[in-house]
Image (cartoon, rainbow, N blue to C red):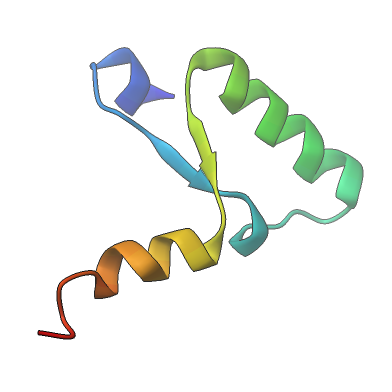
Length: 55
């Protein structure tokens, strides 16, 4: 949330983060979404990292 406050574009990898129970995880994700974070999954992150490496 600090990064968002400082003007950074923040992505959260929702399927690569966890909490002690699902309700806690979902609550944290919802709070980040409300503040402007962008949800992605691990496949999207992996694709971004590997993009352009096949050349």
